[in-house]
Image 1 (cartoon, rainbow, N blue to C red):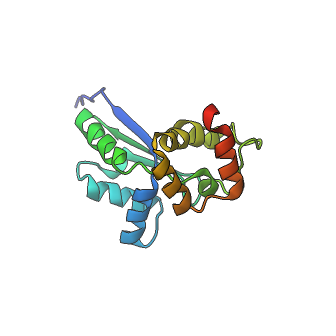
Image 2 (tube, helix red, strand yellow):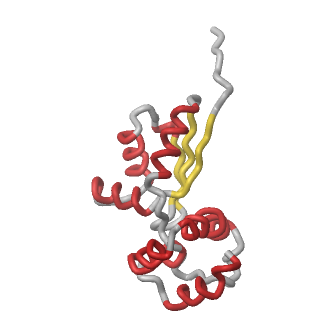
Image 3 (tube, rainbow, N blue to C red):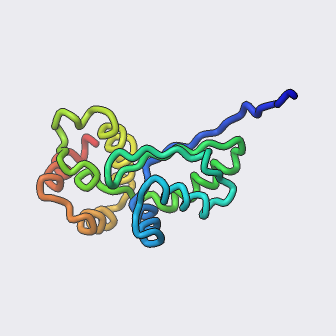
Length: 153
């Protein structure tokens, strides 16, 4: 028997946001790979477990890949993520990392900070930045670094 496979596979990849992490934790009292899969399947009933791949980098950082053959599914996920886009700051996600340390420009640290967190932070107005820094108890070293490097970000 011949089977024909769809060849137009779409993928959307992102880091789990703080808001979604908190929502998952409220429902399941935990946030791990299984809870994240269950959450996305419940929130987006068109997804199946086999279409979600999750890599846990540390306690707060999960890299998620969602695969589908339907571009509308990807658009729905993108909109959902966009509406829940606040990420954990680097001092929470990588507590032993500071800009300039050897791992700053390598691997997940570089990708998360340069491609996701910094653009998100820069999109905030000053009131939002102040609220965000207060919410996540920004360490003095990070406040100084952000002030000194704001123009370079």
